[in-house]
Image 1 (cartoon, one colour):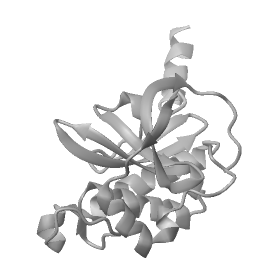
Image 2: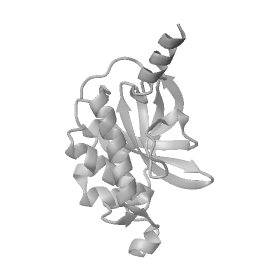
Image 3: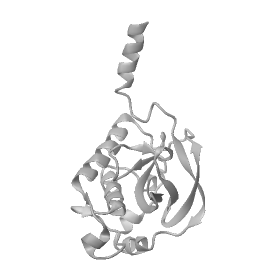
Image 4: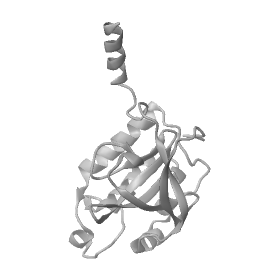
Length: 195
């Protein structure tokens, strides 16, 4: 019996990091204001602003889970976090970073990298939160295992409700120029539609 338990524990250590716990999704509660610099970004990068498409929730298979982790780690390692004031001389400038950028720039690059790998724009939502009294932007990925966060402050991809942030708003699915307020966590419903 002890041997069987040890074997099960060993096998579980190789399982998807999202399989062990039930995930949650973000409840949205009506319209919200987007960060002001977001609209200028959308006028220059409409494809990265988009959340259009039929696939709104991606089935999280092991290869997809590996892609999320790889993109999160690779972008975090490649891009040095610096404020917009230090990099472009403005207080708030959303852009695709090449070597340095702040949290929203890093989230945008992660969205770009996932879209290059075939992830649907409708499942990749820029999301704003607060952390230690400061604004923070992450990329929320809608999956069959819940709404997962790719964050420049950690190499771990986590369920949004397991992060230390207070969430305010995210892009609306289907219309990336519209934003929605975030409410409570809801248990995952098993209605993934693609991916």
